[in-house]
Length: 380
Image 1 (cartoon, helix red, strand yellow):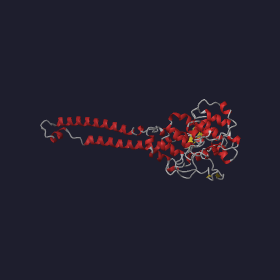
Image 2 (cartoon, rainbow, N blue to C red; image 1 turned 135 degrees about the horizontal axis):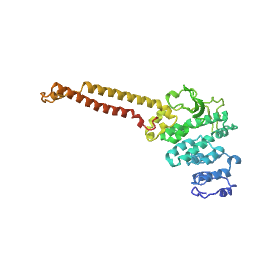
Image 3 (cartoon, one colour; image 1 turned 90 degrees about the horizontal axis):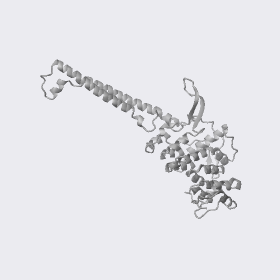
Image 4 (cartoon, rainbow, N blue to C red; image 1 turned 45 degrees about the vertical axis):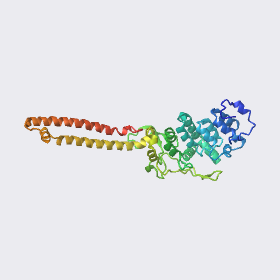
């Protein structure tokens, strides 16, 4: 079987049921890796449903043990290609999604924008199977989906996966900000029961006490004011479970939140070149977080425009010279500067000048107040 063979059928793989799927070729690829490279996304799914590692008693991650350290893992390969069904099956068989799967998604979202829909489906599959992966890792019974214990495990696991630093010290959110992966960043920040909490009732600080549906967001570490150690908005009670020790000896405390050195909004400004053509600030929760800043900037420019308008009006009224003064400045004859003509000319000159300066000042004021509106993603 080769990666370029797109005609492989379920029957063909079924006929190979008695073979060992962990055998490697000259490139140290197993049939699973060859299938993951195939342009036919169903091949790897056929393999996983035919050779079930959990039923056969071997670990799916063992297919990556003899490969080069720099070679991508099987689940990372399937994630980067946008194969959501394969990723879901691999997680159900115990594949480790903590070794850069979400980072691969972010990188692929930038390099392969044509696969945006498939990559988003992979992220949803990771979220959907996160508790399953956590229970298999901890060798525990999975709680009922939708229960309080399930939601707690989901939140802890996904926060761990999205905030744990990778080998270069960056987590998934920082990676998305660094590369300008707008869709993936929006998807992460709107993960239900992790960073976004949909509720029904009366909003906090609502004077009208209107009952409605609304969303709250966990914006911990997005600004310096949210980098405190206090529980995040919508956070569940911290887990009292002991940290888990993996087979490699790594101690994992899922209740611990990894904190970035730089708030995410500051990182967004530092990488503004990657975001200048994106509309990321129009997406929640960034829209609501940045709205006060844009309001302050708008009021600042409005105040400056108003001051300049008043200055121009006063200058035009008190400091515009009359006709006779101009004639004297340029050495012209003053014989025609009668009191009446001087008064009339002064009035006409002042009125026309005031109108000119008034029109230009109003135009400048409108331009200043619209300045922030031209910023990409500026909230309304």
